[in-house]
Amino acid sequence: MGTLSPLLTVMVDVAGRAGRKLNRDFRDVEHLQYSKKGPADFVTMADHKSEEIIYDRLMTARPGYGFLMEERGIVEGSDRSHRWIVDPLDGTTNYLYGMPHFAVSIALEREGELVAGVIYNPAMDEMFHAEKGRGAWLADRRLRVAGRNQLDEAVFATGMPFVGKTGHARFLKELHQVMPRCAGIRRMGSASLDLAWVAAGRYDGFWERDLKPWDIAAGLLLVREAGGYIADIDGGKDVLTSGNIAAGNESMLAQLMERLKVAAV
Image (cartoon, rainbow, N blue to C red; front, side, top):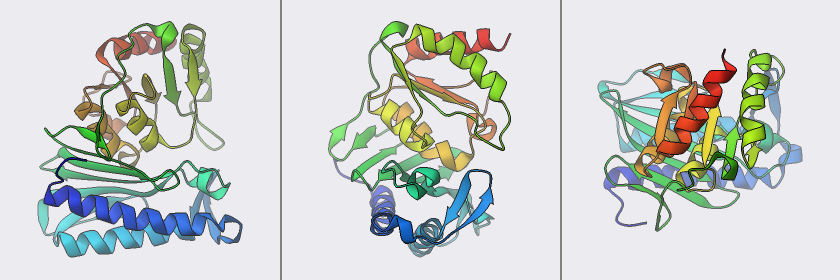
């Protein structure tokens, strides 16, 4: 994986610890205790345990940094220039139903700019990481987005609104514009891994709406450092805030955005 900076060394270690704990619980998923916090959105005991590990380890390693976390929310730090953005378990529904496609996602924001990100899939033992200006990596392999530029050769990832969410009709319009023109569409249930797989060239592109910062922060940096491009579906300036994201190489992103624009008419 090249020489990790002290910062990434900490992040990789913390993500690995949290992920290994998730994996141990995953093997006995039928005995997990969980509570329901919203339609089709579950908080498992494993989720809380993972967040606790991450919070405690990062607080020890970098005292004073703030946090934006899925469960804890905003935790102000004495160092206002640095903030961790953390999803302790992205793909909770997959996890709960015994599907081995979930991740720990940790990003660091410095003065409002994403500077480091780690996404770890413990079920496959794949550690994706990136640091601004140093490229994106999977273990010791440098990542590069796919080079395909024909829409009919492309496989896209997406997320779709489920029960309790809005935007079902809009999503169907987007699907109608993209699906007949591409080689395939996948809905795997983990936005962070979708973006990591775009960075790795496994997917040609990705789009989804109404995501949270912790879903996409680390993935945004991975895609950019792998030579990819990010856009707000509706043309906004701040994808991290809007959560309406499209990603791919330059050509594929432009074609995807064109289809999504047509769907919005």
